[in-house]
Length: 91
Length: 231
Image (tube, rainbow over all chains, first blue to last red; front, side, top):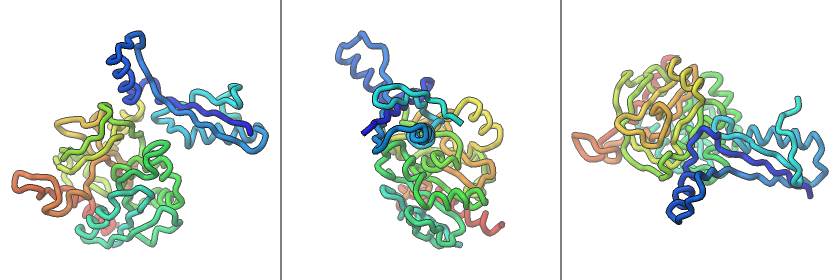
């Protein structure tokens, strides 16, 4: 069963309080080699059929309109069984 | 006058909102997220809570509820719609209001009586206030940081769509201290603090006069009634 992976990150210019909290914990643990942590989301969407262009187009739309909120997040990667695919929505 | 309050899975403040509607002098109507039916109401409140456990993003799954297609149509036709806290998050996710809400900058949940300044007293939910009035209502959220792009922020400020601003302290890192916004038409308003918890003496914020006597939230609901009467 093919798996489509969609990765979403908070916009780079925004403060990421979760990542900041983890970065603070790392510093308290003495892990001083790391300068920052940002936390995003990974969606694993399984499909019970071959991943056609139509399926990919639907996932791109879902990624942009439901899995992410473009005001606060960016879709940074989509891949099918590990192979990256183009993020751009084909008209 | 009938004002609907929609209950979603995880709504917490729906009954408080219904009571606030009653105290303001309108008839509260309980609506259900799974219905495609607004029950003939004249205005709608999306209450606070943690719909769908805040999964995906706060308000995101609720914004795709069956009833939201009717809410979006009614809002676009001019019906007064108020989103409180999680309801505000739903309205941004449904694109009825601009901007978005992110986790509080300090990373912790906050619960306090909050001073707000009414920046726009011309909306369907604020017409009983004076512009510049300072009010106190409870604030309780974990993800109340209002954000928008620089251009969007300038547009909102320029066009009077900033309806409420935090005074004294910015409790969550909201850009420009924004606590609530409206759509361009002014019939849809959303804010993070909770007017419905400041509508009944004995149960509101403390005031200089007496403990828990604050009822600054009542004017939100009487404003909606006034807006409907004026139509």
